[in-house]
Image (cartoon, rainbow, N blue to C red; front, side):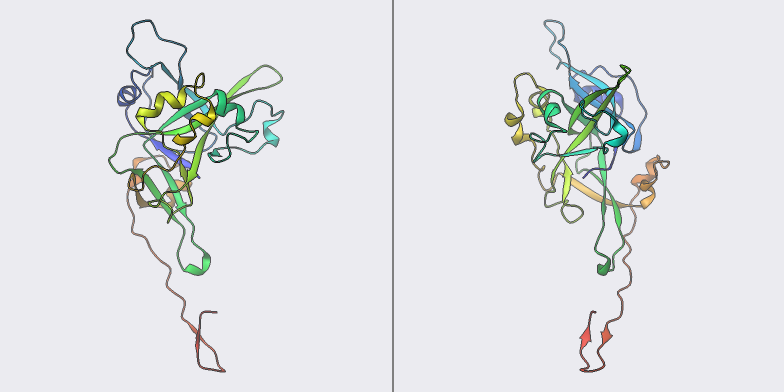
Length: 254
């Protein structure tokens, strides 16, 4: 899954990466959490004739998708992630997969390794970023929920897939990464049906990311500084001494 991420690249660099994206300046964000506003890139409504720039717009949405058919969001679970394997057919995501696919810029994401209690290891947070640096684009979905009084809320979710070999030791899921050469195809909901972009929803290559152990301060949304990315030394709990059976003198782990 993806429960926290960061976007620390400058708005100028982001405009370049997304081909002239119309975007205001924004501060670096080191700890983006569910229900907070997130920046998403959507297909635009058409540029002037002769423009050689991609037709894209940036908007803010709440992280946590609410399908249009939901009557009361308070009684509906917060959908921060959507499984790529089932999103096409699942009622909560079907319409967004067909009509509102988006890109979610990120500098990287956080993941927690939660080992079994008997392993003697503590849960460990990791900052996972592109090995070569820069920004990435998660595959995302967007939905606009309208209340009975006519007010609207734009919401979004990140698509996830099975973890690759580089991440699977930490977690069994990871965000879907869309490569720059595939931006236009992913965003094109007019000519590209969901089944035609299934090939884009695959785990990124095994060596694409590097995972850096960091402190558990990222668990608190109030912590928002660059110190969240500082590496820490992984500490393991001391192994419990093996017990001896009084009847046969053999060692036992139980």
